[in-house]
Length: 127
Image (tube, rainbow, N blue to C red; front, side, top):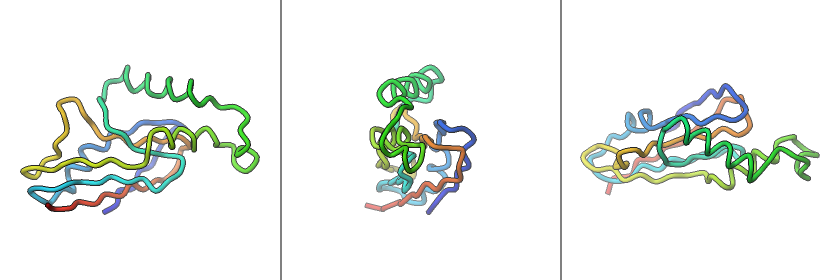
């Protein structure tokens, strides 16, 4: 299953939890979220506005927009490096047809080179 995402900014965090829950069609198993893009990623954490801003600030501090060798090809090396740090997949247990996330946990799609049309793949595996 795939979900199309239209991002609106160069850097953006999008909560995908509700969309992920809607595709769960099993009682027990796991949901895998996988991003096939090299300038985007996924992570699980709290959806609090200050924390979202902090995540982006820390990533900008770790990987600022500057002169990287890859920028000779595309001017988006920082986007690739941020995606490497965030990662491209998340696995969430499913029980009783519900994602087993903690009270404050949410699944985020991370855009680092937008705006673009993106695809997030999901695999639901019963067990």
